[in-house]
Length: 135
Image 1 (cartoon, helix red, strand yellow):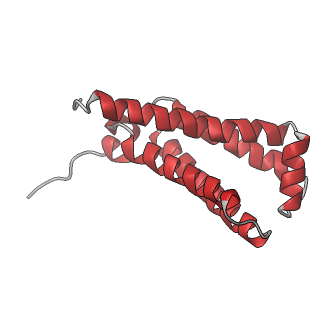
Image 2: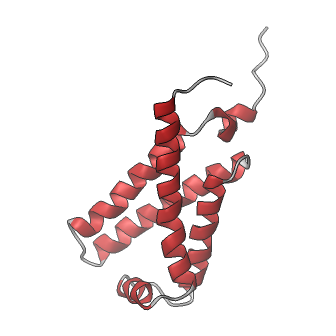
Image 3: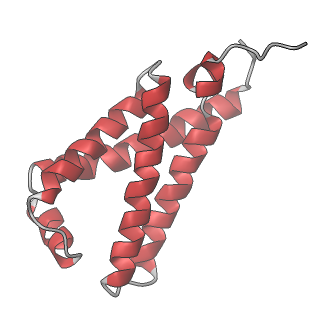
């Protein structure tokens, strides 16, 4: 295994732990139908039946980025997180939000991208592929 340096390892785990927290907490709030989250999602135009569905996927994504292995699931989880965040940005913009309300989803997208980019080789799809044959 290649030595990645303590700074990169710390940055990876910090960004990944924060990413997981920023998806698990609202995910649980949606599943449990926290009144604040229900009101905000209603304001953004989402129907009530959609909240537990979205919440479960958020929690599952948070778990997957933390567990070892599961390389294919990790790629799907990171992609799902970006889909979720871009949906949040579009929903907020369509609801008339601007400024700080839009900054947070962009910041979270950057955090997700940082976690994805810094993940170790054993958490990447490319790490599981055999080297191409040469002629």
